[in-house]
Image 1: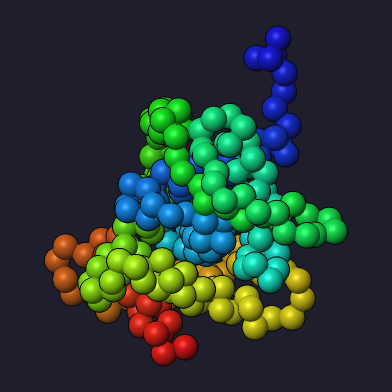
Image 2: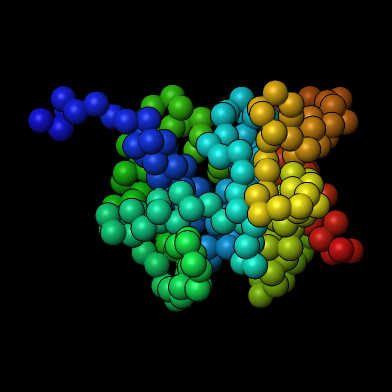
Length: 230
């Protein structure tokens, strides 16, 4: 019986990644980010892993692969394939990128009704609720940073993509040689993103009703301003 079969560590990690990606797609749409390309999804994944410890969460991946198409998580591509074939997520504009050893592609992903139902079930656990709330805060913060600056709707996507690649951990990773984009060395030190978030938190600490979502939104507003002058 399937219930008697031991779940291997590698299978458990794959399921964890599928849940994280499904939550991120759901959170992005809930926040109003309705055009979620593969590149944008991976950039959001990178930022989420780089800032997860600010919410007391363990990031799933410590590194991404450097490619001409931005950060690449092989597990994310496999997770997207599982979600599409399970009828939880739809994909349009699919385009494969030539690669000798990895599955790399682009497309626009949208949540389907079945995916929303599964997401609701997964959010009923304490960890599921915490992860989803964190990812929703990231997506809401991104939208709020764009709205606060009055970015025209037709320019929001481009402005968002420029903002995401200004993430402190991502910029730090790009400066290092090699094919890997490291998020954390060994997990014993905070990422540049977490350090930045905590510094903002300390600056805004005099306000009575400051919360982590406000800190994330302020951080993303700073990144958007950096992107404008980059």
